Image (cartoon, rainbow, N blue to C red; front, side):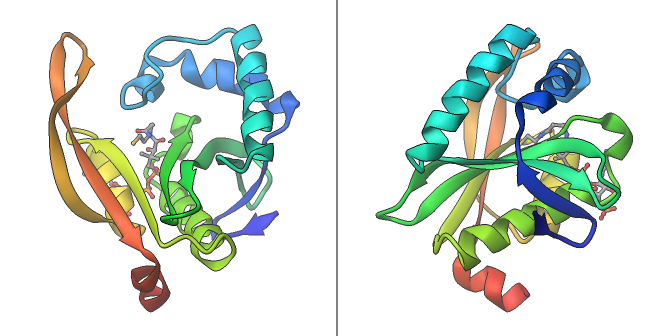
Length: 178
Ligand SMILES: CC(C)(COP(=O)(O)OP(=O)(O)OC[C@H]1O[C@@H](n2cnc3c(N)ncnc32)[C@H](O)[C@@H]1OP(=O)(O)O)[C@@H](O)C(=O)NCCC(=O)NCCS
């Protein structure tokens, strides 16, 4: 376990996969993710196997987010880990909508940043977020991310192209903020 204030992070287990199927079957959950259609359990099982392999190659880290009461509410991860330039891209989903907007996302990210900067010796963690994902942008600002720039019309969704912000937090900023 990696402990935050409101959440704890643990490795993803095969038993978690049916929950992923339920979460990603909800269009509201998928809306701002790269996942644009539901996944079957068989697809999740294949994802899980690939995830284990890339974990062994140290290309990414994926963790389950649990409340301190032990309810699995989402996942947070860092992928495209670059060990030379010491950066990685963060992704997060709180799959259970009942838990949105209560500070779980920001705490899960802060907890993951503790791992990134305190244990993995990364220098920069960045993410991409749809400009119209107001909850997401606010969550990332709370977690210490700053806006770097905006990618124009980079995502096609619901029949239109949408802009995405690139946001990042640096090692020194996280330490100061702590
Ligand atoms: C984005 C996500 C990870 C954020 O996690 P969360 O636990 O909901 O976020 P938090 O509660 O920590 O922070 C959200 C903030 O946005 C605010 N907020 C929520 N809806 C808002 C809205 N419509 N307008 C303005 N602010 C809003 C909340 O009040 C909160 O700010 P506050 O603490 O200052 O009040 C989560 O909502 C989620 O997984 N959504 C679906 C998938 C997704 O969008 N993933 C991210 C892709 S980049």
